[in-house]
Image 1 (cartoon, rainbow, N blue to C red):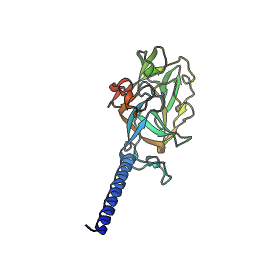
Image 2 (cartoon, rainbow, N blue to C red):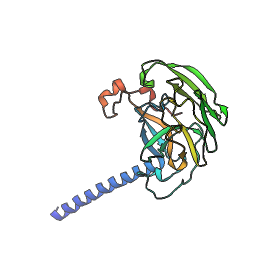
Image 3 (cartoon, one colour):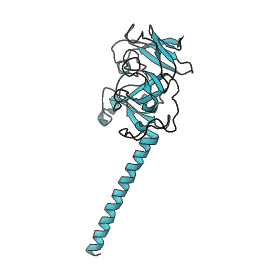
Image 4 (cartoon, rainbow, N blue to C red):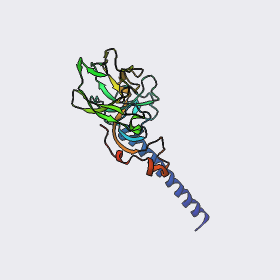
Length: 249
């Protein structure tokens, strides 16, 4: 084999490697943009449903696509393509309206036109109290973040969606609010950890449909105590095996 043949073979091999890498990156971009996006839970606002250290997939097609479906949210178009509204009770990842560089995750409580209010810790939608039943206590700091028993209440929304909420503090600042009227094209979001959630009751405000990223779908990994998934040596003691592959409800 001549030197020219060796050079051509080396060049061809490098070209093929670059081509495979580019194709893999494009495939990953398509999957992340149109199908699934991994997301890690950054705070305790959705406890007990979601915990810090949960890693989940968000389905991007659930509500159609907006500029925020693309990495870095380039201002290429406005509104949503193939858009559909989330259902009441969906757990949704969205861009924080005051600063769209930040991702938030909350539960959809109010739809466009709804009137939402909290009275003495009870949720009211359109003037009707949402059924709220105490189902027990949780005495586990990994779930509640506090070293004492915490009351757990199950809410059932008008469409039948039920979920558990934590009541960390009676008569907290979020237990009594004004009546919020959700504008058209917007949604009212709340965290399940009602006394420790920055949501539409506070500075999140009403969330525009354009800011929706996708629906929280399934937990594929979970690790406690602030450990990183890369710290494999901590898996035996810190991995929450019972949470793996649980659907988010």
